[in-house]
Length: 308
Ligand code: 3HC
Image (spheres, rainbow, N blue to C red):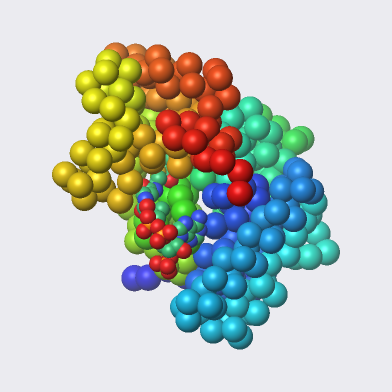
């Protein structure tokens, strides 16, 4: 039996490329009546809104979206300044998706604030790419809730991982990651929400990297090791996978696109949490991150991306 997602007001934490993409599909495809976008940086928030409008314009110009659907999607987007505004004069969120920086302490703080602000019925989701969802869920307990009380155990049951892929408007998949605390109905409602956003859904256990990054990141890391060892040139490594295996991007280009800091952080999580040497991050990947070469977003990675 299909379950209704019941999301009328969505909160999105982080107006970077992932958060913005999530807000976009939620407003345009799922037609969530109110999509509240929040970012700690006012500059990032206005950049996010401008990008949202650019995406709509492009889709209208391509004839993929009508002008009236685009106007309706834009009208659904609301910006808020702080997490507490997810339960304020602009409405109370039924679901919040956190797409902030890939840092456990930051996510724990956000989940603590969300749990203090929002009712127990609100689903709290993280778009983490590799951090333990159970650990993040454990921080979804409001300030003042007595440790060991019924509420302290119940509150993390509304948390789970909802993992979108970059670029969110284009990639057709969402990976759901129930934490060990997650209630089954939270998974069912989240699946219905992702489907309403036009996505296919898979489910993974809460293991390091889940299914997606457990397979993708060692592949990217191996490509960096092949380059490091001089097995082939950068271009030939990418060309091999593009033309030999029909990948849309070679692994080094894809690493630049994802962000080398993100790739390194996922490899470090895999290596630390499994203690398996097959997940050892390539030394070159670490050195490039040391140098501030984060890929496309910083202008330099395996390739150069001159500012436009
Ligand atoms: N936002 C919205 N739309 C975008 C976009 C963006 N950032 N970038 C590209 N697009 C759209 C384009 O507008 C175009 O749309 P159209 O078909 O309606 O014209 C379409 O995507 C194709 O774009 P292009 O023609 O410019 O270029 P490509 O054909 O090379 O496609 C790509 C670009 C879709 C990014 C393709 O190269 C691709 O699929 N690459 C692999 C991406 C991938 O593997 N992503 C997953 C990364 S892993 C991840 O996210 C998990 C995390 O945890 C690490």
